[in-house]
Every structure is written in C-alpha cells, then in structure tokens.
Length: 183
Image (cartoon, rainbow, N blue to C red; front, side, top):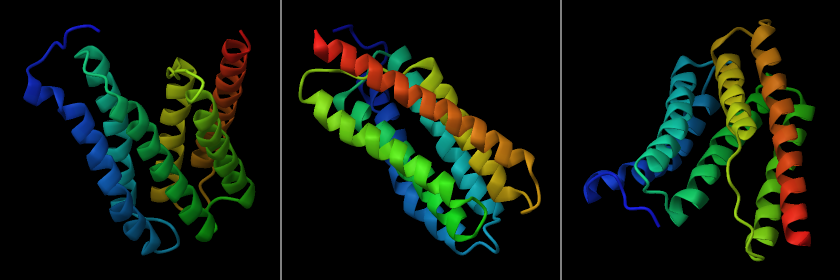
C-alpha cells in the first residue's frame, strides 16, 4: 500500500466529510419535507453541500492516498441515502413522477444487493468516470428541481440525463463484475 501523503490528523478529513454527509441526510430530509410544494432554498443548499462534499472526500482520499474500507462503503451509502431521500420527497411533493422513484430505487437496490453478492467473492468496485458524471448530474438536476418553480422544465431534463447516465453506469458495473467473477 502506498504511503499516505498527509499527516495523520489530516488523513481523517475525507472520512469526516463522509460522516458529515451522513449526518446531513436527516437535516436535509426535514428541510425538504417541510418545504412548500417541494421547493426550498434551504434543502437545495444542503443538497449542494452534500454534492460538493461527495466529490471532495473521494478526491482528497485518492490524492492523499488515504482511501479506507470505511470510505469505500460509507461514501456511496451517503450518496444513495441523500439522493434517494430527495427523490422520495420530490415524488411526495409531486415534483417527480413515480417512474423516477421506481428507476432510482431499482438501480440502487441492484447496486446494493449486487455489491453484497460480488464483494463476498472478492470483486472490488472502482468508481468510473461515467458513475461520477451520473452522480454529479443527478445532484445538479435534483438540486435544481428543489429550487425552481414546478413549471420549470430544464431541471427535469438534467435529472433524466443524470438518471440515464446512472442506469448506463449500473449496467457497466454489472457487466464488469459478471465478467470478472466468471474467470
């Protein structure tokens, strides 16, 4: 294993950001649940902070060579919880259709269930550029839906593009795991 590039206290920052994002999930849920018509600058701002820390914690961990087993598990969990909570609440507020809810939850169920199956067989997931782009696009689209009026179409376009990228990334992850485990 490579030697870390920062002092020990600083090496904990990526995991601290992930834990902070996990703590932010219930705060975000309350803010969006109390939002008028599913529109809230407070919830949108919290969602933006989550999106930024998602990118920052992984980037710092790789750059500083302080990746951890905790981070590999907790980082995607925090993302799924934040995005899934937003999708459910936006659906409840009638800001997203039921198809969006179904597709996101099915994708995440596949990834979580699939992870349990393939991780026990020694397969290690590595985040792809497509997976990162999908997550960014989902954060952007969902965040914009939260802060715009119901009749605004462009945030929905961003969301559907992000969802299509996420579905494609999921298919690629499944194919990659299947090929590696077949060997």
